[in-house]
Length: 113
Length: 108
Image 1 (cartoon, rainbow over the protein chains, first blue to last red):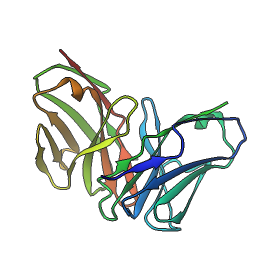
Image 2: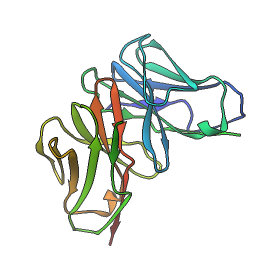
Image 3: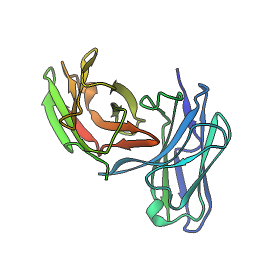
Image 4: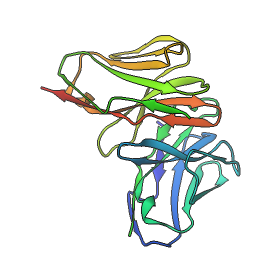
């Protein structure tokens, strides 16, 4: 079974802090994704990566950056956390060319005070 | 713009059949996926339509009509465990757009 793990289930940070969210997958998937999920808005793509050191912006990249130094690990970085970044963050992975079938991690619920 | 519309909530009784609709506005895409998400859980993949028509996977079926900009997920023989949120999602070129989700409540 594909396993996608995220570093924290719950995180509380203060406005202005730099926040790192880590995601690791164990199935050698080329694609990795970061979404945020908010009530009534569904899942919105922040960034995705199709290879090491490669990244593409999603629909809402402002205020975020990503890093993919190893194939199995994809990090989401909030450069200076703001209260409007309080949300559930979901990481996913898929095989290259099979992005319609994504495997999700359990999510990190981030609260920015 | 690109958006996917779903009903916010659907209620049905155990053993019944329910259809969850997804309408979209987009300039182009490869196919339509469906995901299930239980409260507090991660989304899990259910089905994918690359072509128009019906795809069947056990009790779940999914349908796509590109000419009508419309798709749906059909759940048969509803069970209590089917109570969850269901999301449609479009796959495009470097584009992955999810619908707002439909909360399905199954009543005993």
